[in-house]
Amino acid sequence: MKRKIDLSMQLTQNFTLREFVDSATAQRLGINNTPQWQHVVALLNLCRNVLQPLRDHIGRPIDINSGYRCEALNEAVHGVGRSQHLLGEAADLHISNVAEGHLFYDFILTHCPFDQLLFEYNRFGAVWIHVSCKQEIVKNRRMALPNYHVK
Image (cartoon, rainbow, N blue to C red; front, side, top):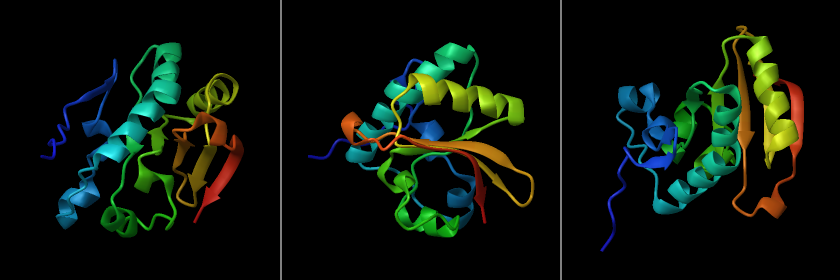
């Protein structure tokens, strides 16, 4: 018997599963973005190793722009085909300004295990932090790009 995924599940002290699966695009297009258990485990790993330590350091909430994405949602938002969002290993973090982005980026870079850490921006002036973390910490590449343009 399969256990139902409870979106109100607390992943860590300050993060719930719902924060990583809610999507206006999914709602608008009628896409079911409910993860499988392996994705929940990956999100738990991301929260424990990166996001909760960052939250504890800055002492205030962190807003998740995008977390887990099922294949249909990833296609709808024009995500890359091998995105770690599909695995539950990645999150895009909302930042209010460039200074806040540097605070997030620098803390993760120096204090957390990560696979990818990207300070991203697009042609419309939007900025955000993309961070991913593999479940097997030793497999993390620590790829950090402080100025990554998204098309």
